[in-house]
Length: 155
Image 1 (spheres, one colour):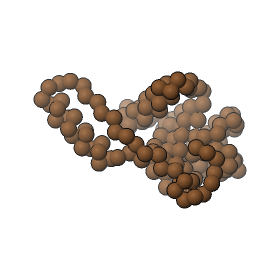
Image 2 (spheres, rainbow, N blue to C red):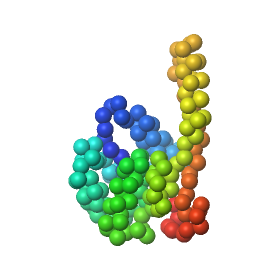
Image 3 (tube, helix red, strand yellow):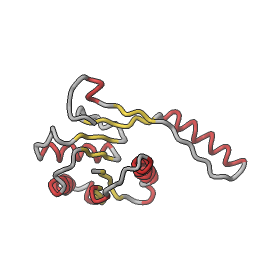
């Protein structure tokens, strides 16, 4: 399950990059993606009282989900609440791009300092000669379970 919100164009650059990167990671390994397992939630629903029920309904419709990867802290917290409401703690692992501040979720830690330095460097280079430049900054998976010794489903 990949959970993300559909937001305005101005809010989607990092989310779009995360989505593309997620897809690329799968395709690079020759793994197919079942996009019916992607939970799209409209921003109006995400920011309403309907959000929790929306994710609960999705999880019930796809009861075989073993992990949920959320694109933002907000959506991983929502997914965690939905799992708790379903009393399904042991069956679904949580992962997020952002630090979720949840004891039951792993997250991808980005090197924000390196990202900022690289962005400035690329921008300077592009100001001199207009060519599209791109950089890949490695990330680190921070796994609560391994860091604390707490055992849960393998991620």
